[in-house]
Length: 67
Image (cartoon, rainbow, N blue to C red; front, side, top):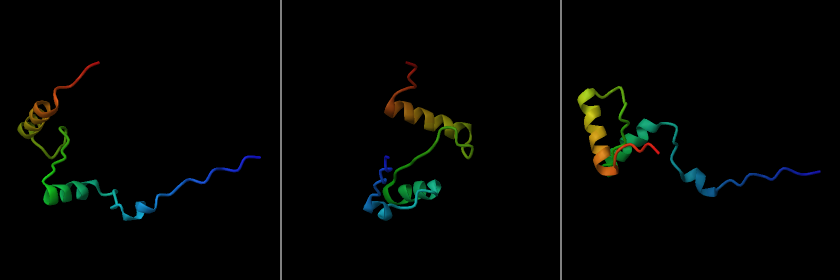
């Protein structure tokens, strides 16, 4: 008879911030560290803003790769 192996729970997990509210995490990242996380297809952006985000992403990280 095999006993199930207990799953290890990292003691540092309780120190990690709650990740359920991603928008709050993004907002805090911008306010605290000036890190912007934005999806090119975010509906809150108009066409021009989405195009700017796409161009910045392609300039910094390259275009879409079709392997």
